[in-house]
Image (cartoon, rainbow, N blue to C red; front, side):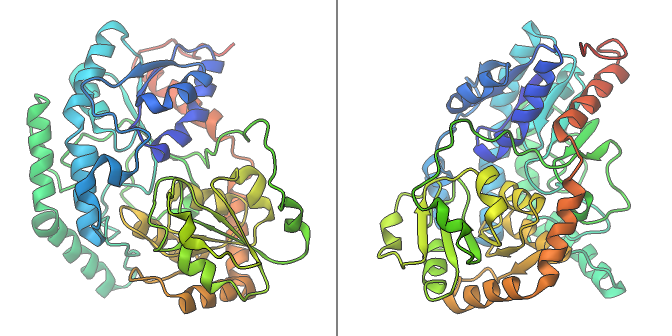
Length: 433
């Protein structure tokens, strides 16, 4: 098995459990990604394969890796991010992966669903391709609006007309240059252009598409790609040697606990963390703020008496004690909260965050704030509403029940083995001891 992932934390985290399960079953696994993740890769039992021709921006924030992205918002941030992070890096990744496949003829190539260099290498080599999502379902549908706008699907006749018009506009106007960029990337990789809509003309679809969530957190479609399977959340094992912070006992003091987080890579502390801390300062709640890679934590000071700040606290330990999560809409964090039955307040940032937030609103698991500057009053009212109105918690708990009983890593490995078997790559029954 050859795994390939974009060198960013959100594209790595779900793959860890799958890699560990594949190696546990006796498969030989190699994993191509950024050097910053080498230790994490090798702890799964996989052999690390470094990026050489592929751009290795692992360990950097988006603004550090792509300085000209700073300040971009909305659809422009989405478009430029897809172009620079995923499309323009694909030909180099493909060269690396083609060279690896020449000396390691894998039975299946498993990639995150935006590692397009893996798609190119699979297409050229004939290796069966499987995707593991790192965010929302990325393929278009006649039943939904296009990605990037953060819109729910239209359910009425006017809504379906709206979605059709938006799909046309995205393909022919908003994403026209992105379509051309995809054509150029394929030509550089020695592949023919595809006559499919923008965002889909970059790569042929996979044989297997694994969604690390539950069906109730994805828009329904009548044209879902064959081979799509919802396996449940992949959140990894609890970290070993967790030492709780000094204030940990306060989580059991009886106050509602509000977790405020903007994920591991977003670093604009002023957009969400500062207004959230100020908004909740006078509330009868305990506020836990996790800052991730944010460097400007001093902007949060002076800290109100009810606020505790840490760079990172493992969700495995923290989420069972949380009553509401305030988030920028990061996909993995949102799914981790819902798997624990924690309702949400989302203030979506850039990239795919608005599309994740649209699914929060559609599933009834939380409140979504508008994407303009986040106000303290709006945050305060949203948190109050989610804590007070039981409907949000009931919906979050319903999704948590969907997650229960799903062994996502085992199911994913079963499906990957079946894919390789169906293509004559490994004997029927796999190599499970």
